[in-house]
Image (cartoon, rainbow, N blue to C red; front, side):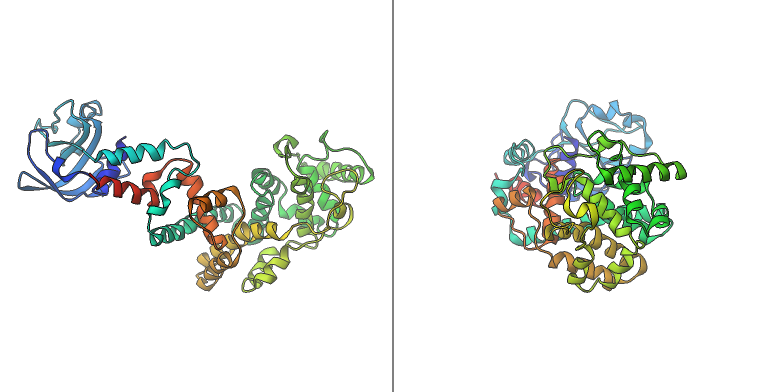
Amino acid sequence: MERLMQYVWQHRLWRSEDMVTNDGRPVRVLDPGLLNTDAGPDFFNAKVEIDGHVWVGNVEMHVRASDWHRHGHDTDRAYDNVILHVVDKDDAPVTRSNGERIAQLVLQVSPRFNECYERLVNARTEIPCAARVGEVPHLVITEWMEALAFERLHGKIDRVRQLLDLYSGSWEDVCYVTLARNLGFGINNEAFERLARRTPLRLLHKHSDSLLQLEALLLGQAGFLGSARVGSDAYVEQLRREYAFLANKFSLQPMESEVWKTFRMRPQNFPFRRVALLAQFVLGGFNLMNAIIEAADDEKALRNLFAVELTGYWASRYTFGPEAATSARALGNRSIDVILINTVAPLLYCRGELTGDYPMTERAIALLEQLRPEENSVVAQFAAAGIKSDDALTTQALIQLKRNYCDTRKCIYCKIGHRLLSSDAHRN
């Protein structure tokens, strides 16, 4: 409730005729002040006219006026500069540490605002404002989509930066872990990243001339070779022998196979073949980051980096066991799109940002604008609500909107929600 009061105050969504102190003096807000997200009063440097006299100072907010005393503000000199106490319920007078009375106001908004807010945050639909999106101007939505796309991209860039610190600035190590994570395609992201961190490039490079040893290391470290889910055939037994030797040599400990998700998953999405794909990327030495930089201007060349065909055992299998009718190509076009969105674009953008190569950051954004929109339930839900997607940059924005605002019901921080709430607040 207090957060909602802060929102109403910050955006001036009160009813002017109700801006009166509890002792009947009219209040006019000249400047609501700066919202404080740390300790201390809620708003700094506000300018408020009370009964014709202008006051400059801080504003504090509470659901109940008595919270002022409950929180010890009446004896805390840090709150002596409060010029107005804004509350939802006036159940006690408030004073400064010297006993001086502070002006107090009950914040009022239109009933329609409260109804709209309650309807949004308590909506049973996936997208709270789905029925009202058409009321929001197209320009507002377009600007919000752009901001959300960068918000999501920078979240991925923060992960890249953390990995750079972890791997002492080695871009190839960062690329390896980032690629591995995204081979999980959402469902197994965490498991793939654990596998990559547990099986570092420096170890794999010792055996980069042998696909058998690379597969043994990665499949063994993933916990698959000791799993009851994996049967036995000649190749599996060969992998097991190789892994047992290498695990003993390098004191390796495998992951628990239970962390990998396969329940109700189509065979082409099983993690076994994608772990084999990761081994294929390391074969001959992992140099993918340099290849991405060299191909950055050419979407087709970037796509070709991931159009890998598997050989040997995994060319005709999704999992361990008998052969299946499948293509040797490890990733389809849609899967490559996902890799370009979640691996290539963030790596290029972060590299350009850190090196001052701003044409590279622009190429990363251009790549997202060139890629076709993603196909998933989130994109479909927004399309049904009237927000269409023309490219991957927009679908990334919609994913950010759904996960960080709609799912958490942070409507007051969403520009679409703000527009609707603001409109309702100014209606009678």
